[in-house]
Image (tube, rainbow, N blue to C red; front, side):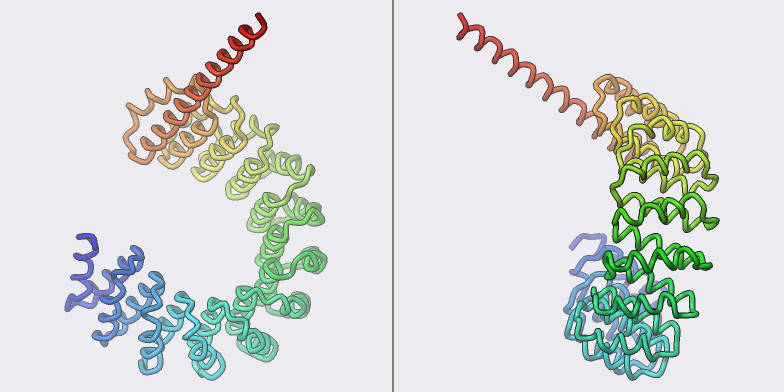
Length: 408
């Protein structure tokens, strides 16, 4: 066990709740199973709600099923609803089927909405389809929207394809936008091609932005060419930023000759940086060489860090040598370490021999360690490419000599 974790574990035993909570959160982020026994002990020994919630959350993140029985016992006997919710959530993260009966009982019989909701979400993470009938029944009969949405989510997390007709029906019949949005998301996971027509039909008339966003994302997940026209229409004409952004993402996942032209056309017209970012990323994934000049132009003009980051990555994905000079310029001048780092990453993909000297010069000036590491990677990649090229030339020369020898 590292000295760092040892020190954190000591803080977990502090008499101050705030220190215990902070230590538990750090241990959860570290995800080291060696911390499980100490976290379990802290859960047993400390009566305060904050520590118990924090230790449960940490155990859930670590994912060690050694904690399952203790979490179940704590859920059953702790009187505090926040603690109960934390235990159920952690049990869902652990995904241990031993917790199935406890979660089902809480989902069906608990009176407190927060607890029922947590159990309903958690049951979907157990990957036990025995819960499917109960979940569908909740969707049909439950009055509380939060519980219904949780049950819908668990059904598609379980991959329960039998729920697709119910989702399709709710997409048009439910008056609640949260439910329509969740079933739209679910159809992207379990509906398959049969879900495309109902999703497109609702997309045309749906007035809620979040529902339309869920629909275009789902069409992207299904990734069928029949969705290209409605997605392009959403990208060009939808007034909602989040819908256009979702449509740009969805078009990334479909292979069709119409898509790149539509993306490039919208890049020129788009005013919102978040949408530009997705358009550029999609052009990169489509490896559209015709877009290189437009992406370089956007890179030079944009004041948005995320757009510039997307642009330099896309130039690496497209792998066109005309991007070498703009990438070197960005690496040397951009104020964002993230943009500089990914400029170097793209240069490592382009493997331009002529950029090696410039990269070495930029390496000597760079102060950010992550960027320096990426520049060194780019230089090493170029050197390897040079070596490979020399070896291939040597082999070709050797073959030529042999052929001359055998000829004479």
